[in-house]
Image 1: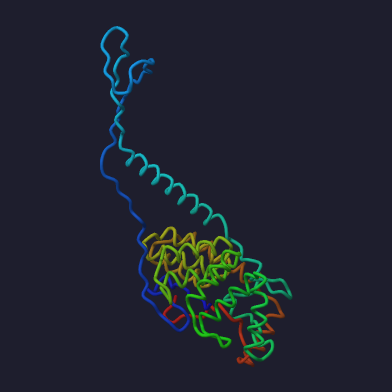
Image 2 (image 1 turned 30 degrees about the vertical axis):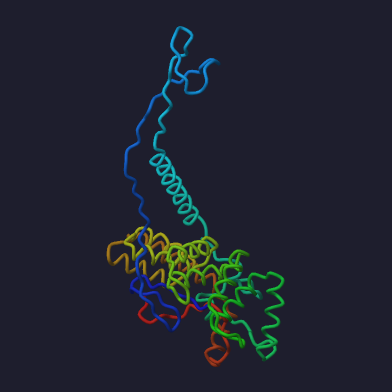
Length: 322
């Protein structure tokens, strides 16, 4: 699926060639009415004797104890649920910020093993036309799909989403395939599900679900998902969290994140030290991705722009982006 890059400084979510209104996702709120009443009971065991409910008078009678009143558990149960949810949210935030600081192995060149420059779609290519016909290509993909290959399942989902390889465009089928691929560990599938659900592109809009998939991808090192999470926090007014996300993605070589931190610094939402740290990290990441062979490849691509690029997610420069 093509990259959807959320531009943090322009109120829109952009898929290549498309724009969609960007709305802030309000956090869930819970409120509970009523007060918990504490009831103290001193229950003593009654000796064997009279039947249940029978009143007894006399010296042998056990002291009568009224049935316990059941204190309403609504507040305590609800409070426990809120505390559990808060604990889970804090745990997720800690894992989200502590992981995904390095790009996944899938972003490495299979020949030189160096990280591919960003955006990946611009500096790499996949030869889809292995047999120069859709039927043969689809047959090869299906062979890997039947073996539960996560990348193949994700790839087939892309073909259904865009109606390629002779397949009829079928977004529900694409979502189903991406969901399966995500469960098998596909980072690209998590990203695509996040983009589809967050923007409501072909499915019912579900921003929390979209954010969830971006979080899963970001924790595995997906740069664009991390950038989008920063944009979500930016639009919700959580500037500190937005900067934290963009600091991570900028240090992995993501130029848009670096530019957004720069704008945040200009507006007083980021410190000079944060911008300097992001800039140094970005430069180091970019330097690590450079090589003489790649510079030569860029020169050849410039001479022959018709060479096919990598299919699927494609982080193209977006109109109006930062």
